[in-house]
Amino acid sequence: MTKAELNKFRSILEAKLEELSQVVRNREGITIEKSADALDEVQHAAERELAIRNLDRESNLLRNVKGALRRIETGNYGICLHCEDEISIRRLNAVPWAPYCISCQELADRSQSQEGELFDDVLVNAA
Image (cartoon, rainbow, N blue to C red):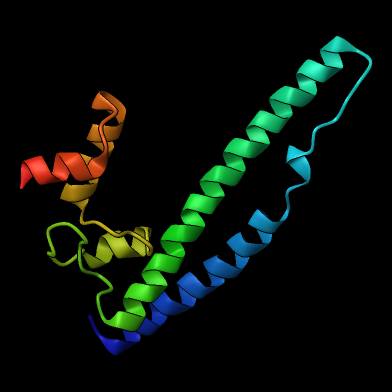
């Protein structure tokens, strides 16, 4: 990967880091609100659950972005964390924080959706 490409990805990741940091700091949606009406209470609980799921998703994405920035600093950016093959530029353009090549990511996705096993266990068995 060229220095220009690396700088481009660093800029993208730094912008995403700033955006996600602001989103994660906003936790107004997860406050518990009491209501005299039972239906309102159920509505608030559903909204709070959605806000918690969104916050969890954004927090995971924030961790991935921070990890990608660390890999840039250590010189490992663009290398799959599992198989150590190069991650394609097309994949990095689509998902700049991608820690895995497409093959290893598909394996991780399959293991999470079908078997519910931990990704590390599946990769150890596949290797």
